[in-house]
Image 1 (tube, helix red, strand yellow):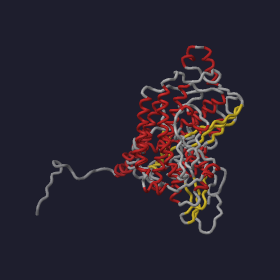
Image 2 (tube, helix red, strand yellow):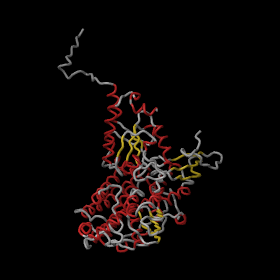
Image 3 (cartoon, each protein chain N blue to C red):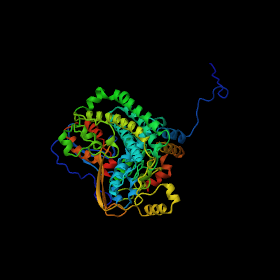
Length: 409
Length: 172
């Protein structure tokens, strides 16, 4: 019997009020379909779950605490590691919060590029969802097909910023680089490909697939009331028939100028949410197409002009003494935003992602809080899993689309 | 009584292959490395990408297994937190000999950018590591290269695991 002490914490002391014939099983933290390090302690009666206890914290890395000891620009690459399936959406949510704190706005071309990258990330994330959800439920070939298309999106990200997974493609005040040559042509080709594959590959394989429908329909039913009271967002709340998308509710960036639909489903089950993910990919391609047209009418400026907070372009730093001095101060000391606090919600692929920043006028945030959608969806599991069969547990975990980087932070 | 006189030297050669047990065993071991699906964080996504369409790990005889009992290699892909470290050790102990460990990514190597109260500063504090794979996150090609390096390493090892220094170290 292991004894708990300071060095080896004791993990199996979860007390369950056990009634007669239930079996307690441990699910995770290393489980191939637990989507990261989710640990569930399930109490089963026969094959039915009577109690579920999601245990989180296996990927806790202290990211929010790190933010308190880093300058604002230093912290940006750390946000990549929150929702690592769609890194740019984290970078962007953070950059937007800091920009609001500073009271600056990115130039138009940067906004176009950012929105394009955000939607590209949404496609990457949704393709990943379709792939892993299908894999968990048992459709291996969909996983292979979806990853094939995902690699093309990764190529586009790589062409733009050089990284496949951890992009850091958005900076506070703009974007670091302009689009490389041929990028717009490639992204349009990719959009056509996604539209085609969503309909003819994943759609053809899954939408009317008898096994897929049997596994997903009426599994993981969340009523609209539950979805609201558990703080769901993103496809989780839209799957319960509530038309709530921050891109429409509180438009940020260029979303107010873009024409796109918010798919919702009244089914409230996993199948309805799956259909939302499929439709959102098509909507994202629609947005990207509009943005490629908008890009052509923009000025080449990429970073906002705010000498107090943001370094001047490289040419100015190299040629003008004052720009160099400011750059030196910003690099060595970091920017000092005004006192105040700010919370900006954004619609990440998984739901409402927002950063709360409290600034005391120092180069470091006094407190940074990340409101991550997956955290709330993980909490929902303890109610959603009760009464389902053990075989459906994997489907329900898959449909919540949780990512542990942003649950545990 | 018929005489079966076959001149092996002039015909297709001897129907015998001569090798050492070491080579034969290592040929088998190195060409069917089955890793444990041990995705912890961001690197797990790249590990999945390595197994998926473009990078296609299966052609190297690498098939991901969900159970440590069936696995030969543990690819520790991602940040190992202190809360998880006990499980990492337990899973490693559950794997059958011979076993190897690839530490994938900066977090697994040294703790990486997460030098905080919650993270283990390198998985080699918990389990012995064979290959350290740099990058944050390493590309799938890097993981493929690491698997090839591991194959090379296995081919140099003795089939009798007791002769390997790593094993002796593990007993200490």
